[in-house]
Image 1: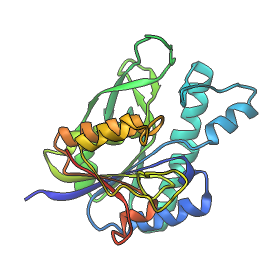
Image 2: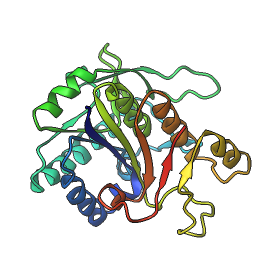
Image 3: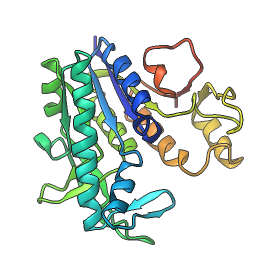
Image 4: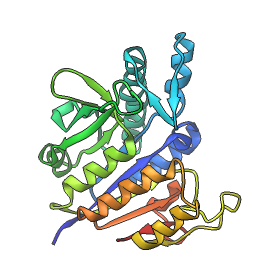
Length: 259
């Protein structure tokens, strides 16, 4: 029988609020089964880039990562944010280790091919080394991944944290009963953005197409949902979207995805 593994991804509005982040990390530390945390960068990288005289470039909500901005996001994601998260987890008696994809060669990616837009040093994942991650888990160490990968040729790459979480989940599905949880500021996928309680509690591949067609699911939620269904299709046991308390409180409303 496979052991439970919870993989949790947190995004900007949790990271941007120090009190919310501390509360989340306390709850995350209380998960008794093996667990992995994946985090994005919030708005700190954008803020720091501007303070350094750089102008962050965004297209369709995605960052254009030139060399100068790559250096900033690496410093912020892999340094300041990642190590603060790890330190807070240690404070909550969760033995964690902060990682980029370059550490232990855990996540190899390639620079995104240029089609209509050149995203610069943005990375698309090629391979996750599940055995290296297993070594941490089997020794009671919780991996904390930031949104930085590498191409195995000395180049770091800025990689979407939602995608990293999904790819890690897919790679470990043969070894664990994996639950993939996407935490953000909403209670789940909403029927109406104006109504916080209008949570769509169950979405399958058929209803997903309908929700896309009527624009209930659009813009930034689309790539997240794509990652969710790809993870399920690859054998991940369950995928959940909800606010940060969903990791310890299943009495509240949240969105569950299934094929």
